[in-house]
Length: 188
Image (cartoon, rainbow, N blue to C red):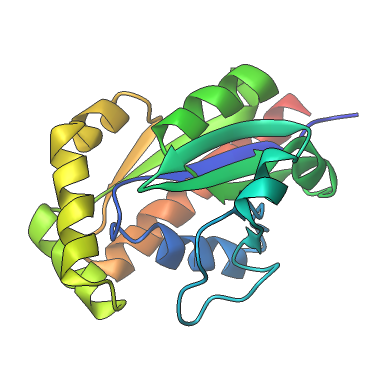
């Protein structure tokens, strides 16, 4: 049985990973749903945005393909979630730890990483627009700077998108997806 290719979207908070994920769904690429113990945000839908669980339930999850902690909350993707999809191409939003773990546990040859870049000023504007508190925004920006998140994560990526213009970003993403599908078809 062939494995699906997992397209991983990675980038700092507010970079537009979720927005570009919606574009992938419009292209017929399903999202892998992760588990989290963080509170649900306005506009999110349980069992569609994330599987929301308590910390105790999170710790009892088996078959984790990756697991990480970000901004005080835990996130993970399970092998069961990947296996329930029969499509050739699926996607997931992850951080750098998730990229490394998924590559290790699923096979680097089955993973394509797209880093979504955005300047810190744009990051702040987008986090404000989605309703994050000033304290939360400050924590996220401080974390990104302190951990050198942008520069560190650049090194993990197969492709980069500077997401300062949505229409351009969508076209670049379409180009990347076409390349993945063309390569997969040539191997089949």
